[in-house]
Amino acid sequence: MNILISGANGLIGSALATQLTAAGHRVGRLTRRPNRPDDLGWDPGQGIFERSRLGEFDGVVHLAGEPVAGMRWTAEKKARIRDSRVEGTRLLAEALAGLDKPPRVLISASAIGYYGDRGDEVLDESSRAGTGFLADVAQAWEAAAQPAAAAGIRVVNPRFGVALSPAGGALKQMLTPFRLGAGGRIGSGKQFVSWIALDDVVGALALALETDALSGPVNVVAPGPVTNAEFTRELGAAVGRPTLLPVPAAMLRLALGEMSELLTASQRVLPRKLQEQHYSFRFPRLDAALRHLLTSAE
Image (tube, rainbow, N blue to C red; front, top):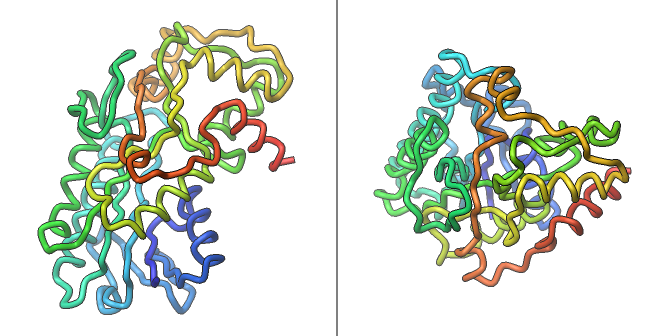
């Protein structure tokens, strides 16, 4: 297949591009700085888009978006988070819908933030949307891909959980304090963390590219969500350090403001659609996933 990826330099995009290329697929990048023959240029903020070559691709994987972590959610930051997802997705979906020969599939990213803060409620793709900033963004993000679906393109919205890799994302940020013995549960520790190893993120996306029966929202999470306290305990065991320094939720809210919901919201999410397609998780258990990830990083 010929696959176009936006966000191909990010944690998930780069891993996916590597695997697809190794499997013999041709991979192009949708990027602001095209410098390879298969690259297509775009600047969604300016509405600039190299549309003429879109018809070359059998599938498109749209992962680009402003990072949600890293700084407080000021009004300006929240606008960038939302607009980079919603406007970029709409621009791409409308361009694909206008092609005489559109790609067969558009995989347009979303996130389990769609469900909001739901305590210990078990959630799957049929669960209602939640409330809050991230839930609102996710709903608008998914809706922005609908022009492609209306044109007959199979649209998949992978709702990503916490993707684990020592190369980036949440795990990379956690490793240093945990290795120094400064790790601990967050708040009560009862909030659920729906995690997934990066290898399985890539595997799930590859499955979505190839499987006509998959469409709409697909939870990209491991089948064993854990509480924050359990996650803390397993990560401490994996690095061989104690985890005795809890972080009060009030302190997080004071330090991070609204962004603290990334760490305190509870989402107990199951990958029902992946399981219905008999996807075989390489790492269904957190302890084995962490051992593999940390061993491979050494």
